[in-house]
Every structure is written in structure tokens, then in C-alpha cells.
Length: 161
Image (cartoon, rainbow, N blue to C red; front, side):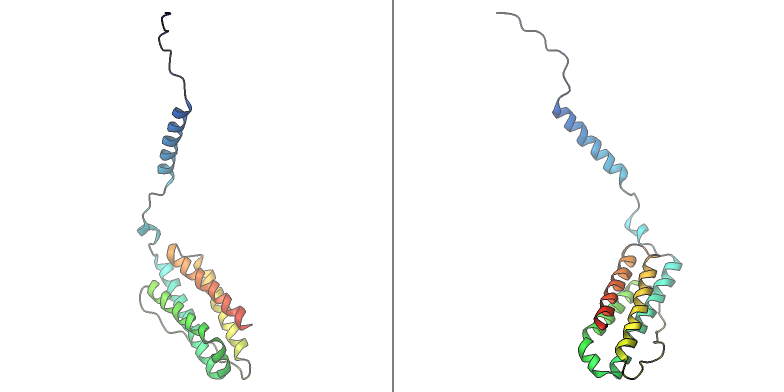
């Protein structure tokens, strides 16, 4: 029988490559994740707090506009009562997100006779634009809340068209 050759140096195998790749990936993921905590991301500056309070006032104004438009046109109230309910729910979410007290908002003017729907749609458009612009200066959940409300109000605007 012929003597067997002593084992040579170990070759680089696929298994070794996969293990090294997995380890490298784990290190890369750990190094790329943010070290900031959720508290840091959700901290509220005084400017953001003021802007959020202003958006509460915008939404209060819109809720009051729904009431005024419904008073001027009872048929409109029957047709889109669910939109007023949604606007009031959005207001409660904004109040919960905004620290401090908020002055009550009042609609500008009142609905002209016979065109309460158009007046209300204009009020909704103003509120949606305001919320959309304000969400750019917020962060985290507050930005998402304002963006979501703005998008929802665009749906209101389309339904009132």
C-alpha cells in the first residue's frame, strides 16, 4: 500500500466564504443603523410645537366650517356628515399630539346663500394645504399625522367637488 500524502494547506471553500460574508454583513448592518433613540427622533422643538399648535387651530377652523356649512345647507349635512365626523376625529388626534393649550379657530366669513358646498370645499382645501406644508417641518409621528390628515382632506375636497 502506498503511503498517503500528508494533508496540504486548507483551501478556501464556499462554506468559508459564506460564513465570512454573513459575519461581514452582520458587522455592516450593525454599523449602519442609527444610534439615535426614538426619543431623540420624536423630540419636539419649540418651533415645531408652535407650528403644531397652529395646525390644531387650522383644524378647529375646519370643524367649525363644517358646522356653518351644514347650518346653511341641511341637504349638504345629510350628504356628507361622515366628512365632518372625520374632521372632528382628526382634530382630536392633532390635539393629542400638540402640547399645551390651543386657541379656538373660526372660519373666515360664512357660506354664501346657495353655495355652501363650494365654500366648504375651499375651506377644506386651505386646511389640507396648511397641514401638508406644516408636515415638512415636523418629524416622526407628527409629520406622518399631518401628512395623513392633509391627504384625507384632499379626499374630502374631491368628494365635495
